[in-house]
Image (cartoon, rainbow, N blue to C red; front, top):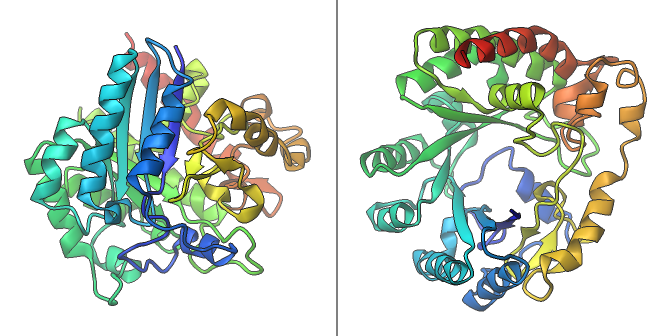
Length: 368
């Protein structure tokens, strides 16, 4: 069975927030064409058609909508595209899955039928309690957004729309693991992904928001016993990093790109169909063509050669003598400065030393 995934940015870099750490805003400033415009129905249809051209009965496909803020493409865009993909997929025995990563500002009751009927998994961005969230996530007019985002969370809960929370882990936020955990538990959030805040691709100096590897380690090392205590109280909360580490090191299942030091092609599409090998590398130099014109199979070789290259750091110390080298191979090359190396130490390896043995032990207990 084949599974093909495409990330769409139907609103390009358009956004109704002005987050202080936004890495995509930084990317667009380094492109000749910063804004690729709103995706038309024709372009979206062509992308779906080109996906289906390479799939057969029993295969699956996923469309992930990201931004900018993808909902700015308009509800009518999604009301057209999702049924189109589902219906045409069904004709040839292909199942489509959908995910929407949103800041939540435009979600209202009108969106709920679409999300429910199409089983869209929503990733809602919340950066913790009000003070932490509002510090960096202002709207375009400079106003706080926490209250409105939490209203969207309540709406998703009331309408039984599945969602997880995406929390950008800045260097500042990572200083407050207990505070963030208490917020998540209080709000009944069962699925959380802490996304490391990154420096710009071509940054000449480190951003004050960018996560450092040592801070990454200290955050998760402090979070882990809180997570274990919650688990022992028979209330499981999914923390994506812990889940990913367990699944990979117990079953060699890479649930996240880069965890085993091998990048997978994401087919990240801009508003005009321009396609890039990864949403971290959506710069002019990495444009591979258009997924509205070419089939994925015609582009994958070019994408993979870029993603597989430039891993010299994984052959040097401390990687070369690391006991996790064959499993990790340096991890995600875009995350190197946020998760892995500083001061001659691999902080990810240090974290694995602490959490991997108890994680595997917990897994054995639950599998009895």
